[in-house]
Image 1 (cartoon, rainbow, N blue to C red):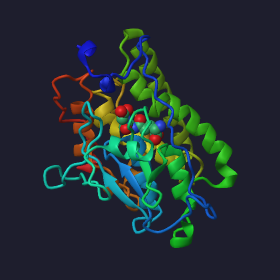
Image 2: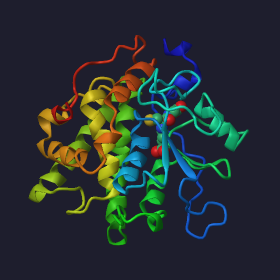
Image 3: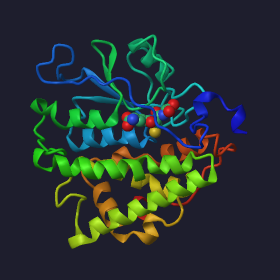
Image 4: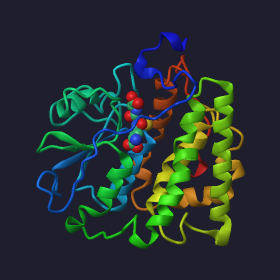
Length: 312
Ligand SMILES: N[C@@H](CCC(=O)N[C@@H](CS)C(=O)NCC(=O)O)C(=O)O
């Protein structure tokens, strides 16, 4: 079956391993920058509601009250052999049309930024409507820009990467990225049994470690009592875990709802923080994964269960 799939829908290499590509556009918006200065209404985020990496950027935008500073455009939940596309919200609620060029595909934005671009057309994209180019397509860097670069335009001075916690945040991000954020993909996209098993086991070892961190003193956040980007980065994976990763990616040694009470407490708390729940579109999440990854779910049947009770 996977032999007949277009290359855009093939995720694992010959060894059966999924290797995430390194993002290409890595410019920075910076106060004083000649090319990319902070400004209101100039930059735009292209996201997918389904995508956990893009969801990080939408959450930081919401928590920082940047809604009037940066617009968000969401692609259709379905990723086809032509990649992400834009849809009319009347036909696909939660999706947007492309506002600057009326493009149909995200790939057209990448080609506009660089006609020779040959990588994958991923979300999130931070777009500069003045220079008509992509500033950055790496979520971990985009959330750092949103965290501080636009502070002159807003009252909200929350800082999710404070200097005194940076080394601790980097350390937590590192194992959570490898074993949880990307770990679920490595398990789910594996095309060899032993590769799947290794990654699946690593996912749950790392979740056990998170549970222990949060258990200590009934801890509210991953790092002491401070909400940091480490929480936001983990949240976007956990909110998708029981609804999608347990079934679709076969990460099913345990579930969050039944086996991780402290992660559940932490998850619920974050979900109800200012503006976060509005960034979660479970319809897009479920349909995207189950209907786009034809390599692992060729009949596109999406599962009904798994959604956390506090979301219903
Ligand atoms: N390193 C990127 C990863 C983004 C990424 O992989 N996004 C996925 C959606 S969840 C995507 O757009 N995939 C399209 C493709 O691989 O063709 C980031 O964190 O920003």
